[in-house]
Image (tube, rainbow over all chains, first blue to last red):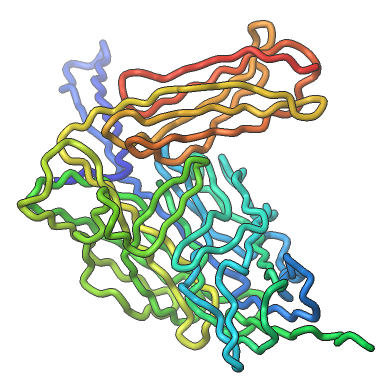
Length: 189
Length: 257
C-alpha cells in the first residue's frame, strides 16, 4: 500500500434545478488530480578548471567563474508539495583529483558559491541558504540553495550561478586530470 | 635570489570545456514518495527520467542516504548501513545504468520489499536514489535529481515543540529571528512555517519560511533575517503546520533601536 506524494483531489457536487424546468435529475461529478513532485536541471557549465600561480589563495576562482551567464549556469524548475522544500545541491565523487606526477587534490579543497541568477521566476522563487565558499564533501552533497514550497501556484523556475573555488595553499605542483562524477542535483523533501 | 614566480601550476579540470550553452538536462519525477509497506510486503511506484538536453546522456542510479542538518541544510551521501532509519537497502530498480537519447524518457518501477523480520514498532524510515545524467561523449559536471522515499510503519506519534525563540537586532533597521524546534515525536515533520511581524496589532510583514523535513529526535534551528524595520516595538509570530490537528505557534516581542 502506498499513497501518492502529492495528491490533490477536488470533489465538486452540483445539483441544479430551474423552477421552470419540468424535472432535472441531480447530476454530480468529481474531479481528481495526481500532481507529482518533479524537477528539471540543466547545466550550462560542465567543466571547471583552475590555474594556480602561487600558493597563497584560499579561494582561487575557477577560470569559468567569470563567464557564467547572468540567468545562471544552473537552470530548470522544481515543483514540491505544499510543505516541501526544493533544494539544489552539488554532489561530489570520492576523489581525489590525481596529478600526472602522483600528487592529489582532496575534494574538500574545492568550494562552491551559489548566487541568484536572473532566470529565477515564479512563486516562491527566492532561494535562501545560498552556499558561500562552502567546501565540497567527498561522496556526498553540499547545499547550493533551497526554495520554499517550490511551485506553489506556478512552477518555480531556477536560475543559480554556481562558482567553484580551490584552496591552493597546500597543493603540490602537478597537472591534475579531469575528474568526473560531480553533479548539480535537484531534490524535494 | 629570485623566488620562483610559479610556486606550482595546477590545472584541475572537472571535464572538457563545452560551449556556453551546454546540452545536458535531466528531468526526474517524482522527487518524493511516501510508502506504507507492512513488514513482509512490498510496494512500488513509477519513476520517470527524461533527457531534455541536446546530447545523449548516460543515466546512473545510485543508492543514497540523506538527512537534514540542524540548520536545515540537505545532505545526501552513499548508503550508510549504520543508519538505523535507512530503508535504502530495501529499495531497488530494474536497471542502474542506461542511456537516453535527446528527448527520450524512460519509466521504471522503484520497488521496496521489507523482510518479515522488519520492525513493526511505529516509526519512520527514509532513503532514496540519486539519478544522475552525464554526457556519453565527454566527462564533466552533469544534472541530477534525487528520489527520496519515506516509509511509515504503523501510526507513529507526530509532535513538534518550539523550544526557544528570539529576535536580535542586526544593523540599524533589522533583526535576526532565531527559533529552535525539536521533533520529539516518532514521525517525521514536513513543516509549513510562517512568520508574521506585527506592530501595534497590525501585520507589516508576512512570509513563508523554508524548513525541510525534521526527523524524529532532530533539532532544527531556524534563522531568518528581518529587514526594513524602523525603530520601534514589534512582535514576531511564528507558526508551524506539520500536518496534525494542532498548529504550533510562538511569539516574541522585540525592539529596534
